Image (cartoon, rainbow, N blue to C red; front, side, top):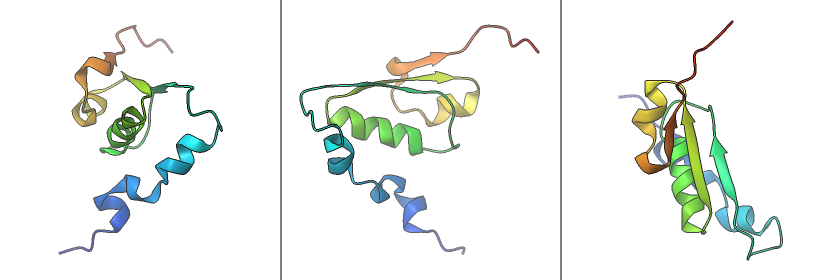
Length: 86
């Protein structure tokens, strides 16, 4: 059985969310985070949940089914439906 790193088990364990929130030195200011494309897997969804726990809002624009599979909150998921033109 292959070894699974701590990052793969809990990718957000490497992020200090207290520092992330305090970076702006403005605890009252809530932000809206837009997720477009990123790594396949639960990372974006877990990050969004952590941000929501600090009072921020978020949304993901999904370009494919993988984006939708891993996104936990369907209410914040928007499927990209415009035609892709070269």
